[in-house]
Image (cartoon, rainbow, N blue to C red; front, side):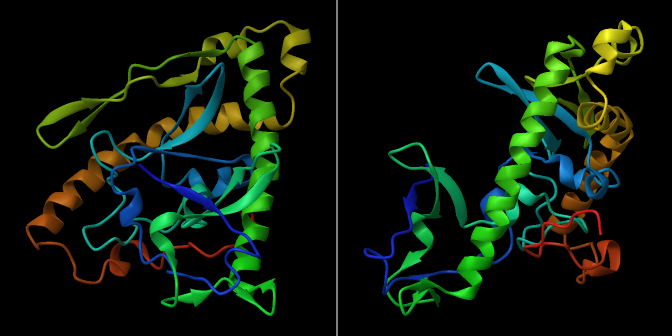
Length: 253
């Protein structure tokens, strides 16, 4: 189980952290939460859906069922764009004792002397400060995304999605998945329809358009099999190009 430790100027002034190398940490993760700000980047590569967290829905990119099909055995991401929710690792924003968001690090990546320093002269180093800024921007957009989901939920247009995808010689099912009911969306009364203008409608149509990308999962499952048999190109950039995993929030550029 992942253990997050709040980063403290006093307790961690002389501590270091081990930078993430690849995406092995997400190799068993079948979905990744996504943001409104990155929808244009996600659409060419991922099918999108919704899951319930507590009483509310959140949008996710579908990555696999039993494993994350976008992570190669080497840890390389098999795609040009990596969802923002994975790029800040091994850091995250976690709620502290007062309920405020604070920078935290995964315990296994905290070090006494190996890796990179967390602080220099009492202030976060540039790499840590850049990560904090990125995570803060993501958190702000997450709240906007959550509000858009709430509008779709209130309009009653989210419905269970019994999605099955061909993986190898069988079909794998995603459990607990929801999608936009296009017929329900198109038959909304004018007053309810008006409440969805802007971000909620962007999210609704992004999910509908992304359904065509379910074949990406089948393709990556076939590639994973080739990689396991050493039959895929040694340089995966030949297939996907360089992965876009910089800590930048201007997703639309």
